[in-house]
Length: 278
Ligand SMILES: [Mg+2]
Image 1: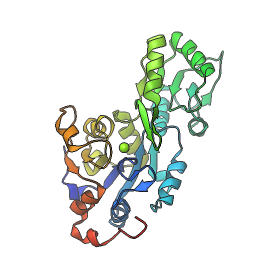
Image 2: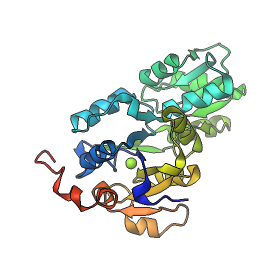
Image 3: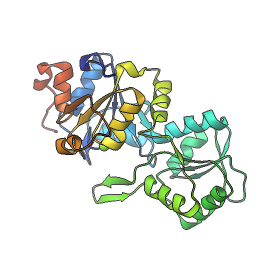
């Protein structure tokens, strides 16, 4: 059930395509976030990318002019850690295909990461930009043996300045083809990501919106999790794309976060925020 837009207190914000495009801040993003915070609300940056740490994202946002504590960045790696802790308890043993930053996150959460010829309770796949054939072989061994399979997120590709690169969803297809194993997923669009974020921040869906540019993750996530769904047309989805589908429902659609800011905070915001650095 969608909330009236001015009644929203907590904002889950997708980053690429919503707050920035590559290394360019989207006009109005900084002013929107400042006004949310000034009004006592929360801006929480939510990303499916489990190859980088919250600190990496907080630093990038800071470079773009949005000072952000790393606690306000929540990744699908954080959601996966909570999912695995609920299932197996902290201290569980896992075989992880992920970057060093995902491995560090899991160790900090109390998991024991194992290698070959061990006895893992789970296999977890992240956006592993350090993937090797050796890792694929070991993970497939465990999956053939029936070890439960999890993934941080399902995105097939990740946008970069140089085009799309294969993401965790493409790696999932490899494991599905080789072993038949299907992974349980933590990140957007799954409800687990929302449950994990609600638990971390102590907030409720009724007063929370998800703002994003991707229908299959951001908007589907909002629909499944009971969040107010706000689609911005500043990234990968056009108005025609939205009109051509019936899978997901946006409660509000804006050209960009700048128009969202005007709807929430009124025309007062128009005079502010767009300094020369934009
Ligand atoms: Mg996006």
